[in-house]
Image (cartoon, rainbow, N blue to C red; front, side):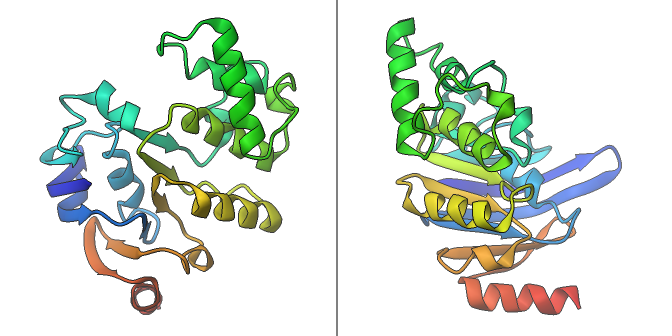
Amino acid sequence: MIEFEQVGHHYGDRTVLSDVDLSLPQRRVAFVGANGSGKSTLARTINGLVLPTAGRVLVDGRDPSRNGREVRRRAGFLFTNPDSQIVMPTAGEDVAFSLRRTGLNAKERARRAAEVLAEHGLDGYADHPAHQLSGGQKQLLALCSMLVLEPDVLVCDEPTTLLDLRNTRRFVELLGRLPQQVVLVTHDLDLLGGFDRVIVLDRGRVVADDEPEPAIRFYRKLAE
């Protein structure tokens, strides 16, 4: 369960979020809104990448501002640009790097990394240079580096923005099969048909919260 209790955030004099009050028990939830609406900032409060300046966020009852490390074990975060998350020379090393604090030895980390890569479309790529992968493969690698930790929640901040249509479809299909709760920030409304809930933000406030079809219809009218 992810909960936002009267969450607000500002950068200097600019208010980015105001009085956001939500509970998210659903398996697939999306945040949509125009640029600057606050949707990415709200998503980043889930695992403490951004700390609210008002109110609080709870992930299974834990506040990221006080229990950041524990929350980040439960909530993985996927950025728009996978290059910002890839830190090691090869795909296998990059996934294994996520396991460095788990107590597994180097051999076990390498084995587990290869398994996760194979499970999610990168079988045989463990020794491949990470930054020479295609855009779609890089996003899969970033995803594997999160999934290897077996989080409860996966927060994805516009993960398909840099992908072509084919890789976008593949990536979204993969998200749909994951056992984790997925919170997706996106501008691509065509991705949301299989979601349980869509939350529309405008100027830092929740202005619609519904099933995909009515929420998207509201958002389209808002954008006219």
